[in-house]
Length: 246
Image: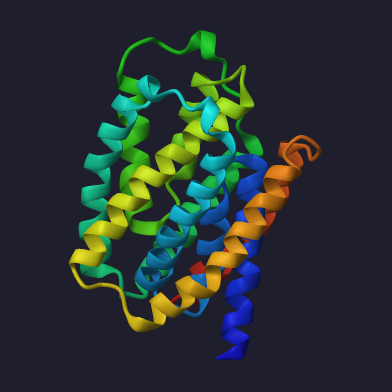
């Protein structure tokens, strides 16, 4: 039990620090390691719950940069996607095969982090299709695996390409809304066990301290280097999930 708590504290602190520096990454780091010893459902519910604490902590530090009108379409689509993700996690979250699917998705995210170029906002067609697609994708995948961040990050990088603080603040609002939706749905369905509640309480301090340290380093650490280091760690864990997850 002691080693489990230590493992959880280290994983959550590392994920929170990466999110504090780069705006996202908590779910990627945490969901790369927690499913190695817990089910996807248990891991996702813990990450989704702690993401509320993490997002709230970061919003308090960046609330002046929130632009609500820019988020309405994205959040509406994310809500619809989150409903579908909730159904799959609630129904099939205990199956070992989900670890393999999670590993495959993490590998795809790693390829995106390593090889994608920074999007050019001038080439994006104006309209609502992009926030709808990004919102639904992030809501759906995040509802299953708690790693919907890359969809939201892509949109936010286009929308707030000239203001990294607005990018990070509005990204946290998106995480707060979508994860609160998941927590409410799973809570009403009785998916939370006493063990998850205990681990949630243990993880709060790790998440708060990790994110605050990351935000303090926000202006000093190159985000590209952090993302690539995190991607390498995620890739190794993802391979482990694919080959040893079942």
